[in-house]
Length: 453
Image (tube, rainbow, N blue to C red; front, side, top):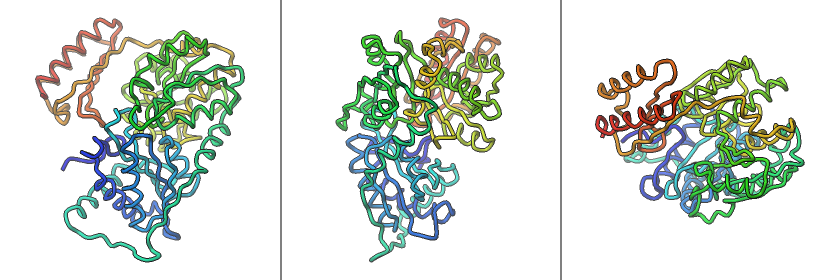
């Protein structure tokens, strides 16, 4: 069996790859492993916070997770449809021993996923995920669980207060209000459909919403952070100052300026880095980002005297680096932004609020603020249906990459990596010229297909 856990939990097609049996078994295993690892309290019954995005499959998967946890003697607080960062926040704020979020983030509706949080609302280390997976597999193949009975079984209750607690937290950490701003919010028919508009409105913004009517089937469907067309049009149509787009579980944020131009995660990080430094919050004057960040982002930070530390792709690796060295700001080009003083994971609503707060504070248009960096042309090609495990071992692929890097010289770079959440390989090429970047990316994609297909 291949490793179940990817870069962001366990994902797959709901009721095919990700079944109720798998969700139940992993939940029982997680309860046991976290108790044994000492990340859960031994002084009282374990408590878990469980949330989900609006996918139809989340309904039966939530039931399976809750059943698994309660059968292991864990009391469950069911918070319903809330963003991933809300579940992480509530896990910490309520002193819970673990949190569970059911979501496949930006993936299409048929997929779903399970993310676990340890005490404090932090994502699990690889070692803990490996232990959960090993224990699940051991019991899946025959070993019986020791199960509590009678008063030892877990109790389950809905925790509706979580919505207001999370929104109050978001408003409480804002440096200034948003009065006078008109903001369009694209909620991707996802987990933030209620939270984000409520938070922006309480902060004083005039709010226009799109993609805020989830029906269980329409999540990420032509909207949200992976499809910005509707948001661009809406911002221009309504004469808004900016637009904010979330993904299905609202742990990421992309933006659109008043002219409908995209502001990606790199640009958002650059704007927030300068704001935090101005207010004394950018510890060590350092930002953490991944190797996927645009070269223009690195050059902009250098020009501003801010250091950049780069990690492997995945917000979990950004977070690990931030926690280890005490950095305050990090994130990904895709819009995962971690503001560690206020969140333990990427938080799209918090990021959007902070970005809007900077616009309101300075009185400067978002386009002007984002102009601190110039994006170099970057082409990303996803190559599906290949053996992603051989990316680093294929001699044919290594030779093709070497030729491309020689052609680009110091004016660009090449990055190939297997996706951690989907069955594909990503080919990224940066160059001073978009046509050159596109041509090289196309050639490399063909080599990936022939070498790994």
